[in-house]
Image 1 (cartoon, helix red, strand yellow):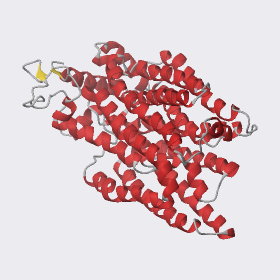
Image 2 (cartoon, one colour):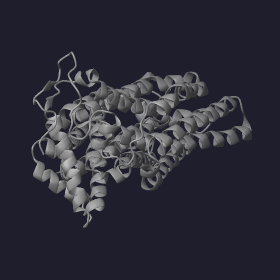
Image 3 (cartoon, one colour):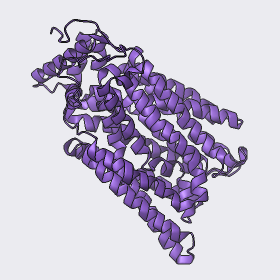
Image 4 (tube, helix red, strand yellow):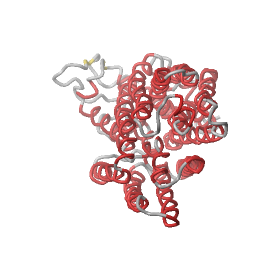
Length: 494
């Protein structure tokens, strides 16, 4: 079955990423519903709206950290199913909300679930992917996030056509989250566990069968055996040590370095400003003079453009051009687009008549440029890079920390302050992201990040100088003594 089955598995697992995109995008539509705003006695630029989005991101922080435990104890597959189940509860509370408290609790649970899914789905995909196609396989995560945004927009757009007195305009978009939750819960049992996790929990024979099912093309049995030997050798070596707790990630130099890389790529992704645009596009469009149905329509088109660019990029370019070059291009390109957007925003504020309409179109164009550039750089690569550089010993905990802190905690801050900033300082708000991109993100990627394309997860250990295959690093515990050698010899017998 090989690549076809691998892609099917990646797409199905990425239903969890679809939930990420849908849950993130649905509030953009909901907060435009007159009935919703009236029902909760608020308007789009109040701290209440910021709190609704921030509780989602805040819940995701803790969900990501929880995933660090469940990934190691329950496995990759069951962690994905757990996230879908929690999201099901959150969706039910949101769509049936009778007061603000129910909305907030529902958003916290939805965020908690998406936090679990956002860190577990890329790891599951990465551990199942062939090195030559890992960019494509894990890039499907970002693709499905984009599809989730698209569906949320058009579901919301259709629901908005009811009378203002009807709560259907916001209850149905929130209720629609139930559909992907049920798909994951019912379907995940038909897909295999990650072969690396199976080997780690002493189910090596089953792991080999899964590896063959994922990668065998009819004539590459030797390659399958080589991959299996590499995985088994590395895991046996890592079992020669114990690494309890979370602090060990910060005490071991090579692990700390890799954790820093994974966390920074998530921080840099948030600092492109892409989620601020996604969450608060209605405020941005209002600042450009675009409101009501016209704003909904532009939002719908905006959400389609990114996934199209992402699909082309992950299908034909990501595994060829690598990780660093697109990130450098993305940093510079997004910064230029935001500078142009700010310049246009400064003129639109004071413009009138036909000139305002022309500048509004230009403003929309540069927001679309940000989406397109993001979709061929940080969008897919943030998930690919963060998932592939973690060593197996700390893969669950490390990915949980990187996603929870780097992505969701930073996102929580922007979710809370952005509606206020966009309302008070309008176009000047963009310069925060521009300055960070040019003076922090760009030099860090250029001088610090490493290229990982076409390498196996085990070979990436070598890239970071951690060990040769099957050979443990020297004295992982250091002076702290948090890691104890369980064997006299670091070289396992194979």
